[in-house]
Picture (cartoon, rainbow, N blue to C red):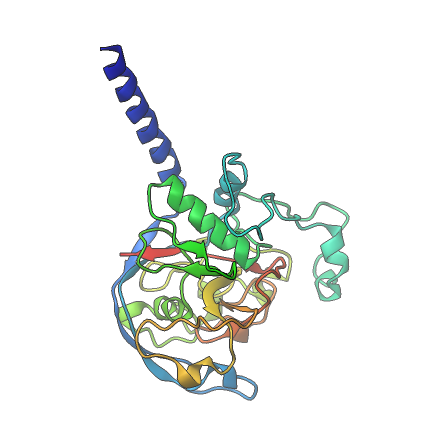
Length: 303
């Protein structure tokens, strides 16, 4: 009888453990699959990397309605049982914004004079930032394990990080998934930014933040899928290796660039960048291990 009660106690504890982490998992929205035209139909000079426009078919998936927040990421960092798989993630909170960062950004000094304060530091409902691509995928695997899902990321024979899209766990979106969701999925929004042609309705960017800091997630208008801040606030890491010429030979169904380039794609612009970098077609590709106070992420999982 004692063994029976012990087993029940273990099962109950495990259930409570998973429930606890389930409560920290980001709220997800269903994104029904469909086809859309990916890329910029009217590129300006220097935006050739957003072309050519090409039709892409996307399978259904779930996406977090908010960017991963500081509070959510802190729970990950504070988990002492965490064991990283890539050996490229530093399991501490990144350096918080302070006068050192401010001194290195003379354009910001025009707007924010009281730099000797600690600046904005870590605010729980702000999007997490100053994370590398490796930090983001380690978070995904950790959250998958804590919520009873199959981790998507692993290592190949060359110790490179791979993603198994058949697994049930959390991962970063592909560029195609990101742009599809930013355009409202099957709603096919024909807007410059995610959810509006008026950037101030949907995004935090350099003009309305005065380059002082990102903002609490979800304050601006959502797009038609109910997803917030896909334009502005922080750049969002994607799974694809970045190539400015990838669209020229992009597959037509669930494309993802797996050819190593040393860089990963980011999408959406940020609080410190100008409006034309917050469009649904804007893209960039920093080094995988690089970060700054503009780089964050949101997560997806299979439906």
